[in-house]
Length: 125
Length: 447
Image (tube, rainbow over all chains, first blue to last red):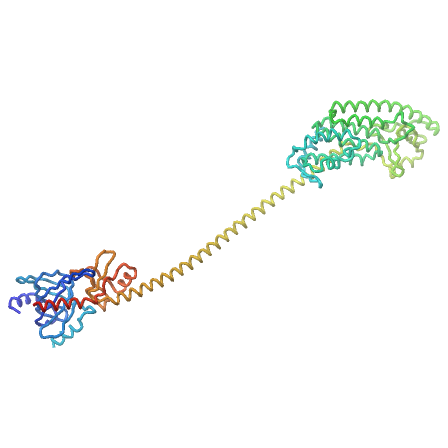
């Protein structure tokens, strides 16, 4: 994580829960493929800044809309498993050519949120 | 008397008498009127016709199948009763009684056929005169010279011409009778004077007593009827010292002279019947009218009572009918309600079953929904993707294809919406992971 990113991160240091700094990628389904159409979903590939049990800070190449709920796949470095989560965009801040984006995970069923939380627990320990 | 006859005629119209063996017309002015005129024309002239003895019987014979006006039959019935009663009570000699019986037909013809009650009244007075005059009459061939019976029959024949029946004609006949009577009384007086003189001589009476009142043969004669022998005689002279009562026959011939006071007094008892005054037709007519008025009154009371009873019964029936209708209506409503309830119940059961089926289907559908499943919401006419499924809150959060939150459902709401077909499930999201994985893999490979 570059210094500049840390600066941005520090400025946004408002979360009450502990975070984990893990490098990795997240694939965000920015635009879903509607049923009955042949279009593929539009996926945004972004960089993980930090993660926590309930959210994450990402650097996204495009500006996501605040309040939008997206499906995302988390692919952490040095970790074999992918996690499929659902997150809501809480804030977006430009960061050079990209956008620093804060998301909150939903405790939704049919996601890997439980596994994710367990993973975070392990990381935090 | 004319007024009473009019009253009798009107009563015969009003009275509700129905004699057996007669057909009655519903109209007072019967179609048989012309035939009735013919009936009077023919029947009165035929001396053998029943009409002289009984109007009812002769009408029955003459009109066996014709419907007649009730007034026609009722008046005939009334006049039959009038004349029969009068003749029966007058106790006339059979021949006289039979001769005077024709009065019924003459009165009938005058009152009904000619509507001439004045002529009828004159006929009645003539009848009364004849009855009075003929009270003690008895057929005696020896007295044929002064016998009025032949004249009676001739005058009756004179009257029995329907075309001639009128007041003036009856008055003319009555005059003939009176003239003949005057002649006869003159002879009668001479004969009886001689008899009285001889009786005085025979009994050596000292003085004459007063003449018996009305000892002529007119109405009101002091006549006696010996019911044991059937003899009628006239008391014409009361003698005194010694007392005696001279009695003669119709022709003035001595019948008997009662010399004992006891015998005279015995005349006031049976078997003698004193007929000092004959029953007048007027009296019988009045009695007949009173009787009919009483019948009419009784009938009117009975009709009134029957009318009120009928009204009450009708009202009762009406109420019963209304109650029955009401009951039937209520019953029908009840049945309809039962049917409706049953239908509703069945419908509700079907709907419930259907709803349950839909609900079950909806439950199954909702339970199959996975993240990234797509639904179509009819009310919004748009498709949404299931982005979040919160188990604790049983909440389903749907977004558009850009991830913007659009709609939320509690699980029950979603099931309900699906069962109501307000929400249609387009895909269940099972394919998402594969497609996303494929895309992600492709991205990874490409990078």
